[in-house]
Image 1 (cartoon, rainbow, N blue to C red):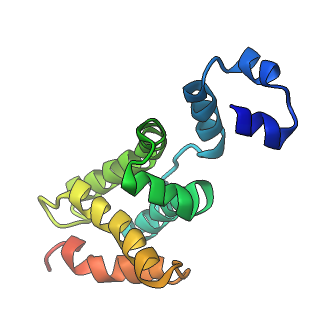
Image 2: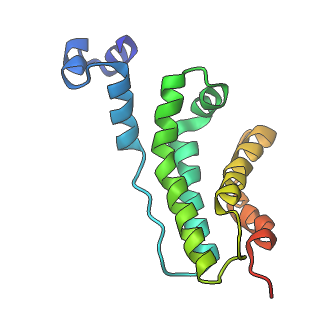
Image 3: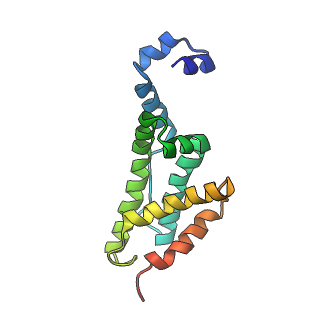
Length: 155
């Protein structure tokens, strides 16, 4: 709270009037920073996955950033880790849900482990960041193409 007050130029008493503790402040910040997930029901399967994955990667890249990702992986601040996971969860759940709808519609491989595939997609972001220090914009499409053989329905 001291750091927030110092950087913002707002008195701690003002901050405490709105947020009684660090957890409430972090929750408010994450709720405002993390956009509500949206995955269209229409469009190709690849377009829907691309749209949802772009949103999830945006949350990791632009909202959390490399320092936040490091803290998340190291679990150096368990309270922050739990709060960020809770903020990211709706994006992941929405993508898993849309993939399951597409599985049921025959647009993706039957019995595909949608939750596992989403973890691979999130992991692809982390892996690229670790290997190269940044994630190039074309990595999203490359990730989808690499995983498409796993996801595509049999001919």
